[in-house]
Image (cartoon, rainbow, N blue to C red):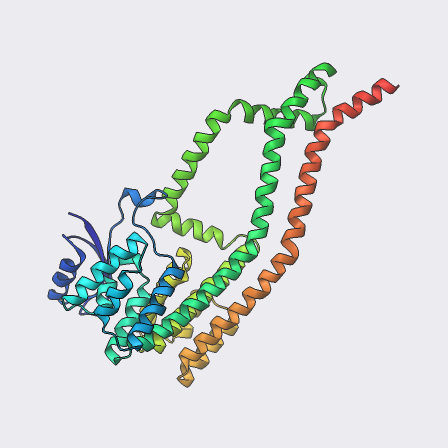
Amino acid sequence: MPEFVAKMGTAEGDVIERVYLSDNADALRRDLERKDFLVFSIRRKAGLGSYLPGMGRGRIKMKEFLIFNQQLAALLQAGLPIISSLDVLLERRKNPSFRKALTDIRDQVKAGTSLSEAFASQGDLFPPIYSSSLASGERSGEVASVLKRYIAHTKKVLGLKSKVVAALIYPAILFLMSFMVIAILIYFVIPKFSEIYEGFGGIQNLPLITKVLLAVSNFATQNALFMAPALLAAFLGFTAWRRTESGALTVDSWVLKVPFVGGIIHKYCVSRFTRTLGTLVAGGIPLVNSLEIAAPAAGNRFFVSRLATVPGKVREGNSLATSLEQTELFSDLGLEMIKVGESTGALQEMLDNVSSLYDEEIDNSLQNIEALMVPVMLVFMGVFIAFIMLAIYMPLIKSYGMQGQ
């Protein structure tokens, strides 16, 4: 019997997360609701396969999900019923994971389940903000309007993500090229020179930097058959550890400390959180529930762990700005803007302004990276390769000098 992780609210107002055994998510949801729990989400507990790359449940790309929602919003706005809209969209789905999930959603809606609950029953295949937004649209009777708001939110997130990726592609290519050049020198070029050096009186008479380079080259070439499986095993082990709770928390905290890149990721997480929170608040979802849903949208586990305390503090009567300030994740200007939004009743607008503020800072940081990182990497590559070439040719230069005397 499969295991499911249920996140739910108790009658006392607490939010808890527990693991249950059940035949399926729907049966577990009905059982928990009979016990007076308010079920927020149910997801299947990951097995061993989910910790290995390429295994586990397939994912749905954000762009693919965006196109689906654009089509769904257009069909609903044209007056087509939800079930008929799902039937039409189901025929266009090529992603097997998406198609299977959408088939299940359509069957649940036919059986009387609301659209938001049907999407929530799919676990982490769809973002929590989506089912919560749908629920607010179902209560107000404006599902199409809610979908349009979610589409606008997704477009902004995708646009920001594209900027970050585009800015880091060129430095990544430079790093990969330098790694390939160094590998070619170590595996193919240096061993050829090693044979030449034998005619200079042996390795012991070579300069120190040449000896070090030869030692590295000999080790790499002699252990190549063992190094490849070892590196693969290390990669798989790291990936498995990275997908555990403690591993993800540790790695994500390291990422935020990386020079240049860490600051951009920090701002990106703040932008995603505030934009998601603003979208949920605009949809009429209570602030505490919105905070619980928006925190995971930040994407970074370390970030999420800091934000996990905020809903409880707000529930206890603290202001949002004060609760966020205690996480030490937000700038003074962002906190002041949120504080003004709370006091004036314009929280959603101010949250959007905060996300826009961080987006501008990300743009400036990306421009700085493009202006500084590429020249720095080129200089580093030049110096490193020059060092290798000096180590290779120094014995030859010395030999020719001695012959000329």
